[in-house]
Image (tube, rainbow, N blue to C red; front, side, top):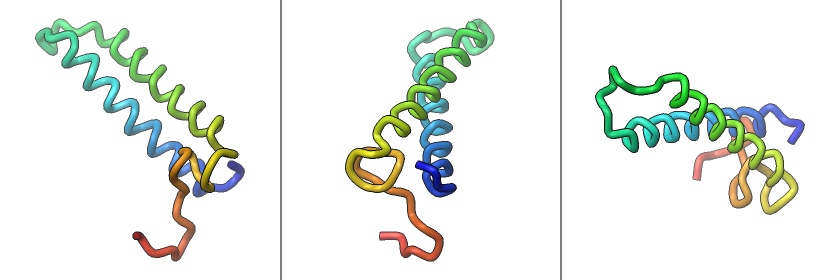
Length: 81
């Protein structure tokens, strides 16, 4: 958990989760984009991103070396599989 690779992978996961949650809120609202409660939408997406970070930290000692239970960040020079 104390490596740059871990936090880079965790940040990527949090950003991805933020975008997915924001998209879900916008689609679920089924409203015109001008009528969206943007503050609530960003708050929901931010909370989802925070949960993604907390999940990565909580799962750090479970499974492989990474932010998720079944994944680990690549080290510098390690080939992509």
